[in-house]
Length: 600
Image (cartoon, rainbow, N blue to C red):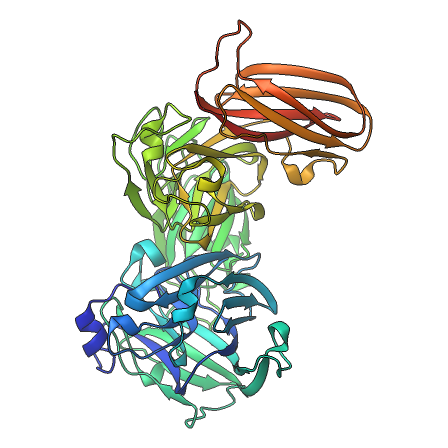
């Protein structure tokens, strides 16, 4: 778990009961295990500022013994599962795994395999991530199986906590353990695991499980036994206040915020809503504005209102009443009013100095919230020396600062097509294979195993360019997932486009372009491409601002592999300036684009 402990807290608090305002829950095995496959069927709790978990943990006597393997489902995200291994002295190895489902709406099977050489994570039977670094060999201490629900003290990680969202419940259908039996098993990867037990949670098996009663520094809740419930074939972990404990919901929903874009208002609530009452127009009032339609959105916690007569020059309040929640005995909300937030469209191109302030016409970095037009979720800021020269760019100050370890970056934009440029620079590592990460944009894997150093070396600008990014919900979503160490980003540029440029995944299979070599290059570089059919090909080069600096027309190209050398000179035979450029091959009215770096 991503926690910051003081040694005093670690050693002295775990077995103590400390009274706090909020009550969480934890169920843990009495037996500790070394290696195996660990599985659970879970529906997590959807509340910002808290998390639900399934993990193994070695009960330590000092920080140098730390062993932990995590699956943590943060309530702030609708499409992310966090995986982590924690080794000696609390070294975290975090990955934010993008998923194409909302983990809070239904049950899914989560699992991890722990062996002497790897830890691999699975979702619904499919392996989605694996760690094999040297730190895995230090995961060799006996660990108990645990599940908990709690409130971390770190809003950058889990989001802002609001007590009005209570109660919250995480549901566990079953848990299974398989021992690691290489060469003689019948389950898991390579049939190297053997089933030992499954608990369907029909009741509390007190020979296997114990209910925790402790807390620690950094946890804003303490665990109580009354918040671990066995009911209807489920184990339910409850997060409550100190008064209404257990699996009880006596409080109606509350309206948190409302925001308008064009003629649509998104109203956000504290909990999941009943369909009929949430879609009853008469339960919503905006004085002097007509509400023409109301629709409960897929997350069940927000409602979309279509309105007419909204004047952006005026201030309006949204009043909501009589909406019910989904408790077994539904609770009805009291009347509640909030001021409607008005969206402010950003000017294109949108340029953001991620981790920095206003510079070179770039917007300053900020955290994402309902009140912002853009921002990060999670991550830490790092700066390199102002005396360090960044190769391949004139924007040194942008590339000298970074945000690393972030999960997402979000930008509000009108629905449409965009070119997204992610500005990166490796200012820390001195070798390849030290940092690798994936990028997912608008739910599509756009780039995997990005290794900045392997591409351009250290202290060199490296821009990832993605064309034809389609946004249909008013928010551009960019996900970052670690493979080795932590992903990073220095800046973001978003341009509105209508050029029809396509990424490689859409390009005809009959045409293949290889990365130019060398890259970065000084004056000359070679390009290779392969065609299956005879035809015409256009080759263009653009600077980072979109100015065309070269254009060649290969009018008749025979099938096969082709190579040519390009010299970085302008039309008047002067050397082009150092910097990041884009090269483009056009065939059949489709354009294939890649980035390359000129270093004089």
